[in-house]
Image (tube, rainbow, N blue to C red; front, side, top):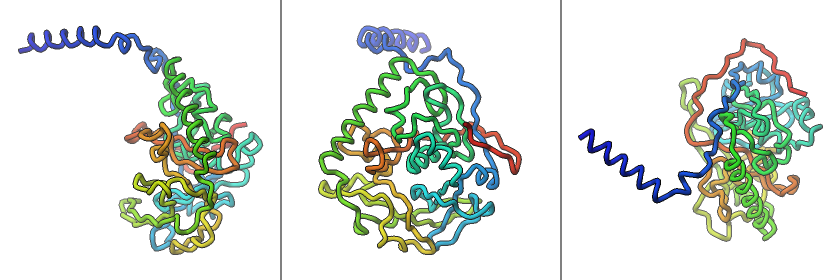
Length: 323
């Protein structure tokens, strides 16, 4: 039986070699001789994260602040990011925003980059490890400043594991980013996202999260067309919302949604009419005239969790911002 299996395997290999020579000769995506440097992925306490200039708060559906995140370290900061799923609110300090604003970042672009720290671990241009704290990105590369990193960064290294890209992979990333840019800008130029969203375009979405071994029901506000594949053609990408409209400010118990930014799409997978449908590496999208290309996005999440261990820093550690 073993000999028969080996003969069959040899025949299969010969058939594949004869049938798909182009595949056999294709350059691999990654240079396997390269060893990425050690991660700078940190697990920190609330005081340390707050000291960086990042605040996170969680609310349950009743509007109660959950005693997790940075609640114990201090109040929210003045710069509001995007409403996130799971009842999470993220704000940034003025010094943190100024640090990146002087390098050409808008608040929106900073927020998109900071919240990508669960997946962005390496500088895609240099291969240098980037510091993350509790899955928030502290060191943001300059090529993220316009919110289109796959297009404007030279993709020399993979962003999560630091693998060195070959010319084949680099070209694939670039070509796809250019095609996506063309399709998205054509949709915008053709009238998509041209109207201002009203409260009829929003909905409350309820879900459950587990925090500290306890299940909590949470509620979020989002655009109906931003996370669904079952939207009528006339409603698809029909409006744009820079922030939650005034009429919806009090929709969630115990929370004032004034000034909170919202995503037009919850992920590139929902961007029908573009080649991003089916891919998860393009995350949520913000459609706004403030962006040089009319849109910006967060690098998204692959399937599965990153189970690499984080370095646990002592309580009260300081993580300054790089110059």
